[in-house]
Image (tube, rainbow, N blue to C red; front, side):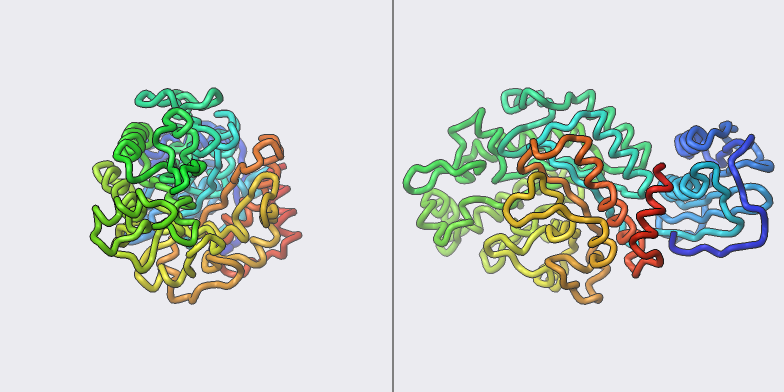
Length: 463
């Protein structure tokens, strides 16, 4: 919590009291905390008496919508926030304070997050995770005050969600739309927005397996893994059909378009290596256009496809190209993950141009199964002691003047070597990194607790 003003008094302890709500829109929050603390649910409009918890909407007109104020006084708890999300986060603090029969101290908590986007992303494409496992993670991150769950569900290895428009691309092990609906319902209850990602024009191997004619080939006829040929109209057609289909399933505010690691742009001379792309680029964008311009327009076209659905759109930082004749849509949010890719620019190059950015720093926030290449499993200690949202690339922070343009961060699980860990091992492996990440997104200042104390606290709250 950001601020606590203590007061003299006995505090509050869960007993025979009940939870009452002042607004019917808080019924879900009320029932949940009542069940968690073993209290009765008094419903809407009842007066709060001794031992009770009261939830209400209110507060300053311009307050952060995720803020809340929790007052413990006269044997009662009152949690007020400008939105259901704020009240929910107040109940999460109450749950932590009352954990294991503990006494919630007398006084006032005034709390709000530093960053509006606090995410956990799971690569469910390379490794199949059960619906129940995903639901457990939603319960976990909801308690930790994360507000986004990213689902990367299509990649070279597999396509993991049932499709009506293109059932031929779906892998044997997958989530049904009914299961996704249950995941979305639980996420909404915990104020977690699910952020889907169909990565393109690379990482489409599962789609290409069913449509091999769409695969990109170089000048020598060699097929390029995972990449579709963006000079072919049918490549755009199938991706757009999938985007539109899943936009009807995932109705949250955010959507990730991918756009990273397109193989045509990982060679020294894309125009010579992929003459069909060079020809298409010149035809579409003029005689001086290059392959990067065709790829940039691909991303912009996918943004246009999603425009009717009114989503905030993200794309990986190496999908934004500098110095071409085509610029990325100005409204696209940069999901900055690495500086290791060919042509990857420093974060400041995006920020100085006025772009908004979310922090996926692969130096701290990437949990890559099997630790391939140079990846090592991140530790909560390192995140807690050395990372802040300003540390976007490597270990050096960007200037503080860009803080408002950094909308938050996401801790990501990537399943490059999928069998390296079981679902249970992944859950255990990310446990403390998740706690450290959300701590720094909620309050990026130097933590008051030393790392051993933070570990002890986390253990006590989940014991």
